[in-house]
Image (cartoon, rainbow, N blue to C red; front, side):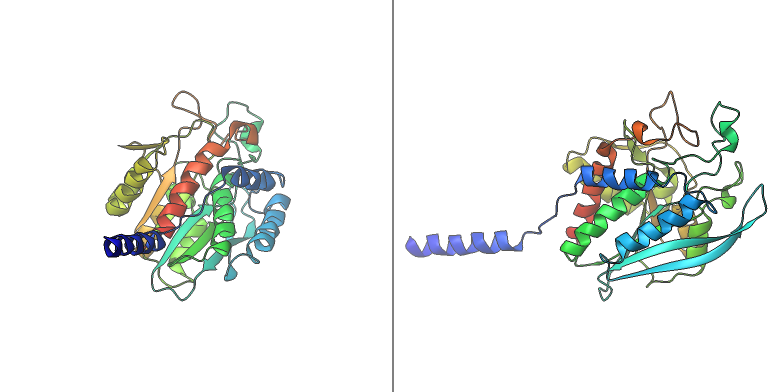
Length: 304
């Protein structure tokens, strides 16, 4: 009996020791990263806020990542025709791992609040607390976690520029940063990509985006099922919108099986602050950031 007990004890120790430790994701920290970006004001390409927040990203990410790089390109601004330098920012972790994944978000903000009712606001840049700062806020908090706990896989955090300066009705005038990235991939070809956009809603609901399901159905189902098992109530295992976002150029141009986690109904189905002057910190919350961030750390650290 003593031998059986001892063997059982050893098996128990072995089992516990083999369990994957998943770090906690701090939603409040992520929300502070959202606020810090908004403190620079609108970050539309060519603006002072755009220049200053790029420096903030580089100073924040460089001490955390194994390597940080910028991918510069020049685009002509719609309406003005002025050429502006843009920059994608890439922070890489565990460079030598055989499996490499991407988690991305765009960091620029819309130069015009063209969906708002205010006539003057239609020609003014928006703050982009949700549409711009929220996805990056989760990436920055992930960078802090990845610094402390080395993942088994390679993780590439990519901040896309010039996602949101296009002309309404012309999809390919948007997502210029991801288009450039897809044509000039500066990292080992990733197994897949997960794009985060508009995840800071006060009433978060993350339905399955339809392009995502077409491009990588197995990853979509894996993530939404994991969200369900973790009790992340904002994730809804039903399809809703079909949205042209940074995941589409990644797939269409480079063949990267990319998906999008997005809550396009901001804050809900009856009202939407998207591309309006109401996209401000006060209309955001840590809740969605926490649920998306928690899902991402489980996905990263539960890899075999």
